[in-house]
Image (cartoon, rainbow, N blue to C red; front, side, top):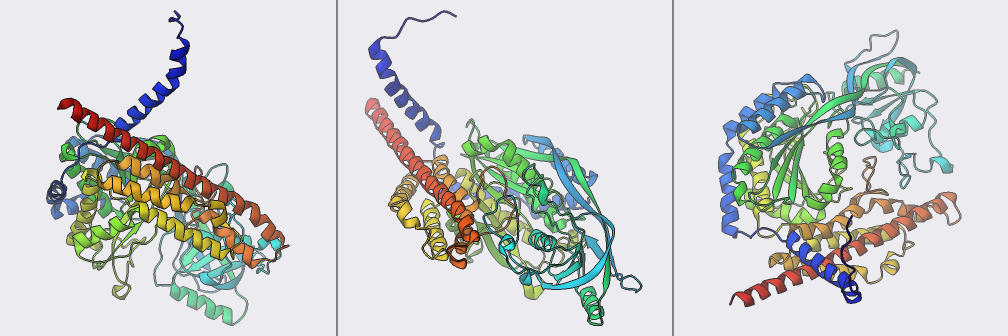
Length: 627
């Protein structure tokens, strides 16, 4: 290879500075959004999208999807995906179907009997239950879910009962069959298995059976967590059957026989992605709108109606792409119901780097269009909560207090650091609640067309502002205030022993100032959505992810700053106890992770402020030159 002439000493000395300036100028041009529309233009866009989405179309799409039973990886799900893809392609919407391998679990059958009697009520087993040709043992009544011991915090991939390894007085079920009131979940299954249960029978609080999942793995199991797959059979019976069983137990010891069949293993699944790119904007940042395509039985409200809303919005926003500033990726997730969010988790893993560079939010849609829905709400991470409240006020004229997202609903993007948003419109308990959820009665007649249109319009209204608005609607100040409140709560739980104020120094004051400055610059159009989300990302991650950003956590809700959840151990235990001593290193390292997240957000803030100033100066130079 020919070498060029040697650079002079002066040129070599100046090169880093020149490169740094050119780098800043490049970043400044990259982070700027497309020209901003007026408020009236965004409102007109939102209305045109809503007008393009008709009730008749929503119900037609819902029917096309709900006609299929859709266990993930099965022919019904694939037929629904084919229908969605064909509809998108017919309208020219770019759509791609990925294939992925997922570790799925399909419940097949269950029986719960008392040998020698006619007790044999309707029963089902759960996804990821162990299969058993017949586990027979004495039954023991464990009360309700609230009576079970809690899991220890801060143990990472290994889940154990609180105090289990430190002399806690825990029941020894000694190979008996445990019955417990409540819907089947992963945490009680773990606790009962660790206490020695040979099988678990959940007694539904109502006269119905709800299909559910009992593993604590998130997405397909990995080498790090496959040991947490349940190893005991799990079944569910109705409330009346539970009462009958307890009446038998009142007369003396009762043996229970639990038989389960579950088909668990690897399946090929398909993930359909529609992509709406703003016209003339290359590699635009984008919002991910997602909902699961699979469902239990015909899954009309959970979740064919949501799938229909997604399809209608993809078509409508594609038609106005020339008026968008940000892109929209619409994802029909497989593997939600019987593979523990395998599709969304695969997507987050596969496109992690791109999502960190271009992702603006994850908007989840689930359970829309329910007949009799009367309560509006939202689930939103802190930066989106003011926006979620405003959207509901603007569209429905109601005041809401958005809740913090739980560990459910394909929320697979916390490790990426994407802020989260979901709107809810649900039935009241006094009206019977969402009683058909996860049952074979979730059929097409449970969808109300007017409610579905209302719910879809709420999402479309929010998306119009997120994709085309002059200011991306996140509040950096709200994110920082929520972090500060969480720090206070964890410090109080530790009795002041964490000394977070001392270790953080003046960082929180600086963080508030930077957040306020960036919010003002966003209002003035000096920074764009990528800048705002870059600031949110490290704070979101530490607020939602315990211990590790790259490997999904078990999905156990621990509240804000989950890595610091063991803080209460510092108060609960004596100073010289092993449990307290073992908690201290975890808390020190999580404190360091918190400090690093704040430092990263500060660095991002300072950098984005610098870039905004450079952009402003460049604009002024151009104006001066053009005079």
